[in-house]
Image 1 (cartoon, helix red, strand yellow):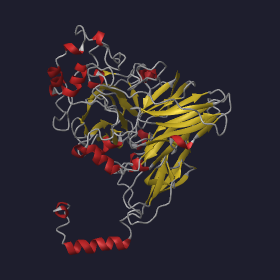
Image 2 (spheres, helix red, strand yellow):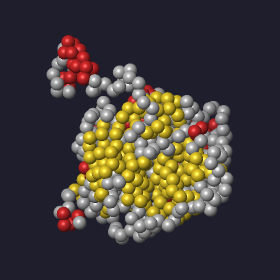
Image 3 (cartoon, one colour):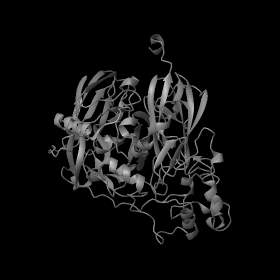
Image 4 (cartoon, one colour):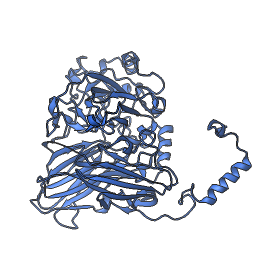
Length: 597
């Protein structure tokens, strides 16, 4: 039946066995590790390649860190793959050779380039077949901090990613020393096994579920969460229970060092190249000045901590005093951390702070962000990380006066959805009153006693051309957490491949993203930078390629569709994208050559 569906006609058992024998004899379709052959160990941490002609080779390897060992896909023999260092204004040809037994690809995350070299199989090119070499060739039109990764299946989870830095055409006098900090995770579990476990066992990797007596959440709130069949500790799908968190391929016990001389200005290019993890970044006792977001310069803003979503990048400058300082990348759900030492003494390790208490979701994360009467910001929080009871006007204990049955109903009131959102089993929640939370610092960081970066702090360092949007669009982020189904507007990618989001070339569109789920989603648009509508003023809205849409909230951006072609648009949590939270954006028509010049 399988072969008939595939249009290949029936296959007898004899033919099947002969075919299998032929494949095995050829030695091509079955990877070496599956044939029992030993694999070489991938090196920890990236090497570096540069120039106008670069060669990258994708192979199966073995990788181990922190006592965990397993299969990996390495590029040029390292996990992460090499740092690709380029210069603004140059041309580059990159030959990618696939030595795997399956298709592969490389997507150049955040780069402006012809769409056919964007590297997304099924959207912008067919992928790279086993044994083939594909040549990417494009001019470098920008500078800044970016990264690259496979867009084939779940390869990114097992090592197929690396950093990318583009030096500016003019010397940059803002720093004396420059480091890349690439955040990621490693697990010996096969990514398709993780995907299966997420599908069959809700909260499979969550070891921080709230118990019946833990914390100070009132009983009626506990009953409310239970009545809605929702978990207030559902922060991350995959956690430190199976992940070892990495900086440049090194685990917390590896003693990774970033050396400096006291008085130096050190630029840290922080890239979240993880598959599924948001990180909170801090260097206790050392302020950080943010100078770039997603590769684009912003007006400097000094903070003590910031949350970085999957696929985002931030560049910061620090001037640490003599000594050893812990560079901490704490997972958003507080299930583990990546760690390195920023030190003026080679061989000295900084003492890391302890993990903080697990994060608990609030009413705002269920899409009830306006219940405190705020005009668009996050709700205030009490000691247990919950809602601002005083602002709810329910009288006395706010939750005690709440009708739990009607609330459960309101969380699934599909009449609040626009007609183009498909209502079905892939949609289990509707945000009743979603609010813009650009000024929200991120889950778990709204009660810390120091300065935390917010999107409202970001202002473009150079003024944008002034253009008003001529069209608006609303896209809902939808899901069914129990069934692990994820989608845009209630439709998985497999259902909309022939119905892309359409932009006219050079039109300017205001896009509002509405998160009808209780998870934060990092939404990435390929091939473009959009401007966050964050109150900075039309001409200073910060340029980004990825935006975090907080749970039960909205986020809005303006985009000028001036890069023709077909582009991926998706949640950058790998298993959400794999489950269907992805779409194609098509920009047409192609401009005449004289107009594009």
